[in-house]
Image 1 (cartoon, rainbow, N blue to C red):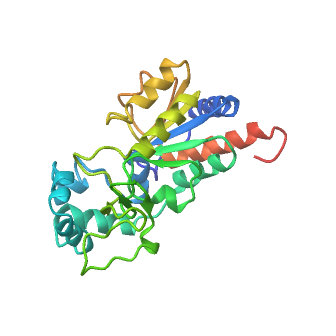
Image 2 (cartoon, rainbow, N blue to C red):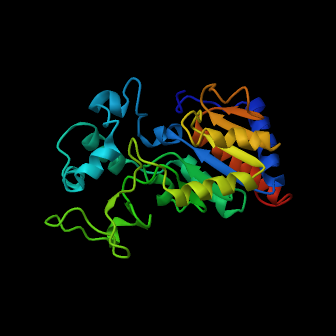
Image 3 (cartoon, one colour):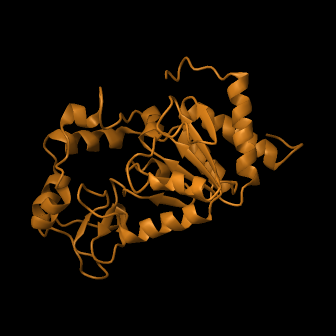
Length: 274
C-alpha cells in the first residue's frame, strides 16, 4: 500500500476510534511489532521482491552452531563484513531512522496505554525513540549479549579488542556474541519469560506490521484471544491474523497509529486537547 497516496476514510477512522476505546478501557495493553512497521523506515522485508535476503543471500541456517564452533571467526566477520547478507543488513540498518509509527507507539507507552512492546525486529528503531517496556525477542543488531549470564551490553560502553576475540563478559567471563538471535539459537530466557508474563497480564494486544507466524511470537495473539482479550491488528493488507482479529485496521502503520494516538489522547482526556 502506497503511503504517499493513502487516504484515511471516515469508516477506517471510526474503527480506529473503537480500537482506541478498547485500549483506554483495558487493564493492560501489549503491542507486538514486526518487519512491516519498519518498511516505512526504508528497511525492506527479508524475503520477497527487493528483500534483504533476496538481494544479498540468506544467513546460514546453522548460524548459532557456526558461532559456537569458532567465535573468533564469527566476530571477525561481524566487525569487518565483506559481502552478502551481513554487509547488506548492516548498511541498511545503519541508514534507517524511526518513523511516525515508532514515535506513536512510544507516545502510547508514555501515556500509560502500552505497558509492554514485544518486537520481532532487530533494527534498534524502538530503542531509538525510547519505547517504554520494550522487549526485543529476537535481539538487537547493534547490541551484545553474554551467552552465559544473558546480560546485554550497549556496544558504546563495551570496547572490543580485535586482537583478542571473542570478547568476554565483564561480569561472568562468558563468551559475548551479537544480541541478534541467530538461526538455531534459543530465545534468551530472560526476554522470553518477560514476554510471556506481559501477555498473561494483558487484555488488549495491538499487533502492528506482522502476521505473527514465527514462533514463539505467533503464540501471543492467540493466547490473548483464548483468555478473552481483544486483538487489534494494524496491517496494510489482510494477513493470517485478520480473520481472528477483534478489530482489523487496514492501512499504513504510520498513518493508522497516528490516528490511534489521536483518539487515545482524546478519550483519555475528554473535553481536553486531543
